[in-house]
Image (cartoon, rainbow, N blue to C red):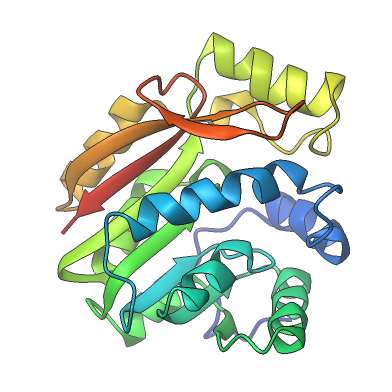
Length: 238
């Protein structure tokens, strides 16, 4: 169980946390519950690496899960702190990193608790597939902005709240193809790009780029596209 300090000010939904604790042991199975993340991760990592210098950079991965992106960032030469409030996910991440001799500072902690201790400390802040799982995503954007140093970069990935997204990412991925556990996403929590951009501006961030993430679940091929109708990535600077 996380200490009170670890959950300081946490923007947390216990139901969502339970979902991810339940699948933590299977996180690193590329054919398991997290298969879509395994397919998307190289493209997400490349998006960050192409837009921010990672060698020697202080990076924090917020909502790191089992460490898929965090390990990639560390392998690019970044000094990585990776945080999550799902204890089973953090345990999984630590074990996998130890097995691969990847040096990452994993913490069971909220972004708010880290912000209270180390404001404006990170060259790069990443938060992938998490905003749609917190009660107040606008407040989380402000927290992410606060973690970034002036001139630093913030990278976010999430799902658009659109009919096409509901059909493909929820009905298709969860109920038809069973690529994700049912109930992973709730339509009402999905985030339109205009909303994300507005929250970023309010938090003092400049939106540099939006890019759609297209995944073909049959071939496993992924690519960036201008179309942000379903999954998309955002690059902000502070």
